Length: 167
Image (cartoon, rainbow, N blue to C red; front, side):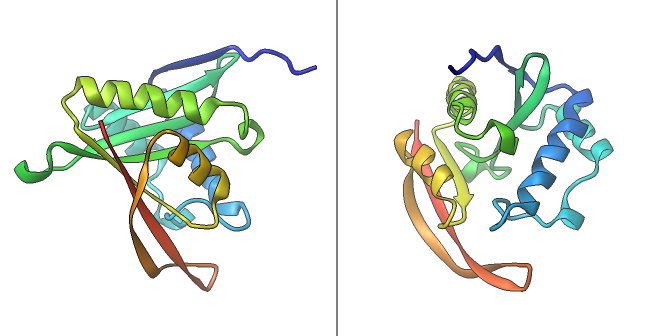
């Protein structure tokens, strides 16, 4: 019998930076990796904490039983012509995959983005990340393009898919 999760989605706080970074790093160790960013390119805990503190983007985390198990962000375009678009990033701890946490976090992020006047959400995903693709498609994201051999991870050039959803 599956136990019920005590899931809470909330605004990220600077003290969440370490747990969120650990979740991102975990994505680089999966085979194949699920993140476009290599470990040595990821921002350190202090930089992440400062970004959260700055409020320059929407930063949300998901907690299960008081422990951060996922994080998501939506960063708006910096130019006047792209302020209506936000770039989404999400990471869910591997042991929490398949439990609906990513979906709940994405829905909360969409709600916050819509309230902030964002009209389009954009994201990137590896085409072999079938779990993420199923989630994004089920939420109404559509492919906008393919970046052929755009990312090199572990010496392998990989495609990236660009997806978007209009709010």
